[in-house]
Length: 213
Figure 1 (spheres, rainbow, N blue to C red):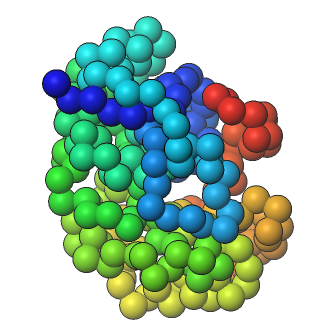
Figure 2: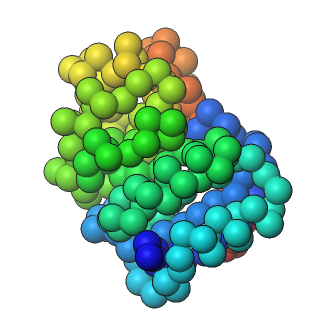
């Protein structure tokens, strides 16, 4: 029987990505091999509770919401994440996966919308980026850069150009909370006519750092 270590399962509004604002069930898996300087889910690094796929699906169904986001930590750090994603798709959910981009994506069910981070230098983990994942992305997927300062912004622009990312899928630029002003990042994007979607973490503005929201 497949078992997965789960930190929490809860209903909230999607705070980021293309489906921002939609009621979404979040399935947060435990564990992460990265230690980004701005991480706001360090509580998911350890602990959690082992649950079966059946129990997870039953819990998700209780919320009666079509959108499901599998997140972490780093969900792909657990091998059982892959059958979980497939099972959620089979059950008819619109499934997204939030991943650091540091682990292989080749086993992810093609029905899943992949929201993949490319870690900037200020994250402290840019050396973990797996650029061999990029050819696996399609137009339904999204790449996210969390920007901490102007150097990160310039680095992200160069990365976009080197890998022709805008031609591959949607690009998200998000200001690191309390590190760079949202308006400042927005002004940079506008000045450069950058082909990206500027986004802010909606949940932080609604509920701050409250867990389960």
